[in-house]
Structure formats: C-alpha cells, structure tokens
Length: 519
Image 1 (cartoon, helix red, strand yellow):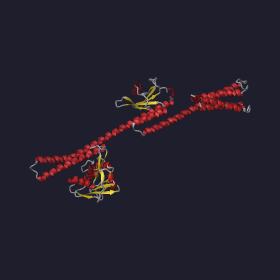
Image 2 (cartoon, helix red, strand yellow):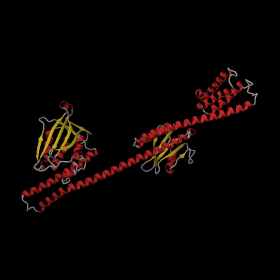
Image 3 (tube, helix red, strand yellow):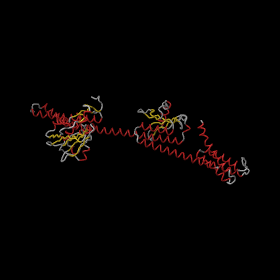
Image 4 (cartoon, rainbow, N blue to C red):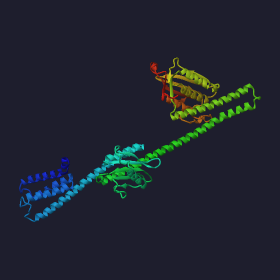
C-alpha cells in the first residue's frame, strides 16, 4: 500500500522540493536578479516534470511555481496580492508558456514512448516471422504464436482450428491450467467469428459485451482458425498500439499456417507423383521382363505337350532347361521387387551372424552357375580372409546380383574376377568384368532405382539389382561404388566394416539389429 501511494505521489513530492530549493536559493540574492530571469528559472521544473512524469505533474509545477514567484519575488512580499496589476499579465503569459511548454514536452515524450513501443513491436514481429520461417509444423508454430502474444500483451489467449470435418476445436492455450476457452459459449462465439469471417467480441459491433476478443486467422482467400483473447477485467488496459500489434500477429500467424499447409499439400502432391512414377516404372519393367521368360516357358511347355513324339530326349532336355531358366529369371525378378519394397519401407531387419567370406562366394558361384554359360570365374581370396558380421542371406543376394550383372553385360568366353581384400578395418569385395563399360559420369547413377545406362538398353533388365545391392550395403554400414575396368569393362566394389580379431570374442555368435522378436 505504501509503495503504491509513493509511486503515485512521488512526482509531486519531487516537484515541491525542487521549487522550494529554487525559491530558497534565489531569495538569498534579493533583487540582484531581474524578476523576468527568476520567472524563467521557475519554468525549469515545468519542463522537467513534463518530460519525466507527464502533463498533470507539469501543470502542478506551473501553478506552485507561480505562487512561489508571486509570494517571494513580487511586492508586496509574502503575500499573494499584487501591487502592480501589470504582473497579472505577466502571470497569464507565464501560465500560458508553462502550459504550452508542458503540453509540447508531454506530447514529445508520448511520441517517443510510442516510437519505442513500435520499434519493440516491429522487432518482435520480425523475430517471430524469422522463427516461423524455420518452423514447418503447424502445432509448433501456433505454440510459438500463443506464447509470444501472451507474453507481449500479458493476457490469456486460445487458438481454435478446424478439424477434418471442418468443426472448430480448441487446439492451443497459453495457460494450460485455465478453463477459459473450453466452455460452449466461448466455442459458439469462436465459431461465429470463423463462419462470419470477421472479428467479434469486445471492441467490435458484434457481441461487444463479451469479455473475449475473437479474431479470425485469415488470408485473402481462406480462414484457417480463430485467435481468442481473454479481456475479462483488462479491457481498459489495451491501447490502440496493442490492438494493431494483435492484428499484425494474427495476419502473420495466418500466413504462416497457409505456408505450412501449402508445404504439406506440395509434399503430398510430390509423394503422389513420385509414387505414380514408380508404379508406372515398375509396371513397365515387370511387364517387359516377364514377357520374355513367360513366352519361353509357354512355348517350351506347349512344344513338350503337343510334340511329345517328335522330340528326342536331348530336345526335351533343352526345352526343360529353357523352362527352368525362364522360371529362375522370373524368380529373381520377384525376389528383387520384394527386396526393394522391404528396403524402401524399412521392414528389412538384419540377422547378424559371423559370415565366412569363402562360404559367401561359394554360394554365389553355385547360384550363378546355371546361366554363366562359357564365362570363366576367377576368384582371388587372401590366405586368411577375415570374418564379416552381417546377414548371410542378404550378403549372398547382394553378391549374386553383382555377379549376375557382370555375367549379363559381358561377352561369352570372357573372364569375371571376384577379388576379396582388406583395407584397415574394411573388407572389400570387387567384381570385375570385360563387358560393355560405361561413361565415367554414369557410374554414380547406376545404383539409382530403375536407371538403365544408354549402352545397356539392348539388354533386358529392370534397373533394380544394383539399387538393392546399395541398400543392402548401407544396411550393413558399408558402401558400394563402380568404376571403369581397364582396358575394358566395369569394376563394382563393395566395402564392409569388419571387426578386429581381438574383439570377436566380445560379440555374440548370433546377434540382430532391430526387433529381436522378429521371425
């Protein structure tokens, strides 16, 4: 109580003390100073009070200063009467000058305060817009807006957004411990502002007696929600500058919501277009790849059925081999498609075991033996190859895809070299062929899904094999790369991390990454 009273009356106390000090100081010198100069000195408290405390203390300073000047410096002394009526004109001029000076000083102070407040608001709006530009999540964005509005205006706010059925629901509150904004009456007013498309509540023509202020968050063509301000008991504290600040914040929030929604819609449109592109590419590749083996299988099977007596045992065996090769080709295509789906969806889980490099290469060679024809396989392995921790099935699939690729794109009777080497803590598998070879810039693209180099268009394929190899290598924390093989062909190199022999005993013989309960 005493502190509030002192805060209210301290300006008048200071003014009184200052006038007493000026009066005591100049009364000691008698008539050595001209009365006009003394009167000008009494204008100093008026200016000081106008600058520091406002218009009312400055008027008080003018009146008290005039009385002190009249009593102590105008004859008869120590009396408020005036012997010379001309002093009345002087007093009138003094009061006019004091009032004008006080008004100008007070107005200048007010304008300075408004300018500072606008600067603060502009800085706050800039900071908020800068933060919003980095936020793409609508809920995080509106949490930032509600926090900023609540702190800058010192009032409780609530934000309503439409749900999937376009029903307005309360989504954000500055004070989670308050129930304001949840009652049906407040929701009805917010719905009115949302549907009406204009501000309602206190300060407007619609429901002006409502203690809340409901402003729609709108851009030129759409309303995205409603920002509600709880003004109960604080209506008189909101000045015009704060109303303008609130409108600016509302417009900024609406623009940010519009930007976030457009970004979401653009992302969905991009994903839809990408899915459609991939679907078309898959259908084209699958239909093209299935047509040839299906035709071979159907033709061979039909020949065996209709010409059973026409074919020798060697002819039947050749037709059966054709059927088997077509079925294996179709099986590889289906396995590649399923593997790519698992890699893309994140469903593929590693079942880590210690894998023997010789066993991996042996299984690979046995799987490609049926279609390697007359190509010669040359294997180079160190005397003591390291063990690699990984999923044996996936590593075998990766090597089979790479070697199959080398067989497909290299001529018959050529040599394919499978080399295993170590480099510090890495194990390197390299597969070299003497095939077509590619341009240097294409070796970075051959691991993309559905990419087919121009030089390989005449050979059938889907462009999935090396993409799957890249996914499997990265799943094992490794990498895959390609380069030109001199003088002709291509070298595909897979780099996998290996564990030192000293640490092998610390790792279980069978471990997994991902869900240990997956079967």
